[in-house]
Image (cartoon, rainbow, N blue to C red; front, side, top):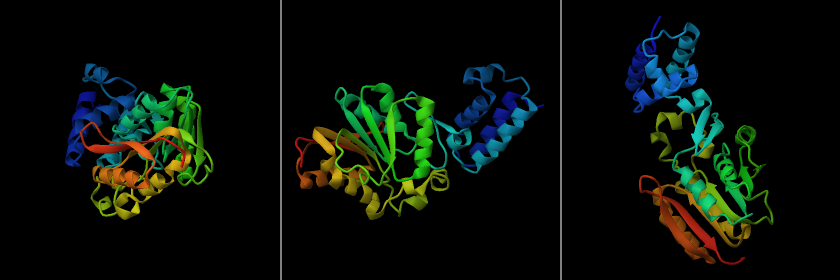
Length: 282
């Protein structure tokens, strides 16, 4: 029988040969998650034999990971802030930088306020804010019914009072206004898409990744409709690609009625968000 250390060594080599930069981390996560042990425990039991059924399961998923299938889809979970979320190929895997958007919402929402999460996917942003701010009323929308099924299961999994609704941006929210709108919409250009990492290009939903007009079409639509859905003094924050940040900031200046138009950086100091405040109803 193979030991944990031997199996780990084999997986690290397999993943490295497949071009996976995080080969050691992925090997450790795959083994520990399936074995139900912590990473320190993995090294403590390094010389112990791996049970045959567990080895079979690990090898099966390792082969798929070597074909660049995302580890989160293989395990069925992803972590976002303090939440463990279900993820399937119907939703994007939550990115670490998107936690900054959720943190912005937690900080800027008024007591007892309301929030709209545009393009909710797995429900990560909405549920993370709900966990931190149970006083806030949250609505989360997505155009994909499959994504919303995952989001609703995550609501049961994580708790939190969130209304999930199928909507093409604001289409199903006539007359509704919010104190804060958070938008993580598709922003990858169709030219960039073929060059994405295999994990993204081959397995994550393209509907949630790409948009026409240089990845800007949905962001622009949402920006143009935003004023009709913000309360006086309400705020919005958009996640986008760094080249799009000045374009969106300039659009808000041209639209008028917005102030505190700020470009915010992500963890790598790249321009990743544009935030605005509206001072009055349009």
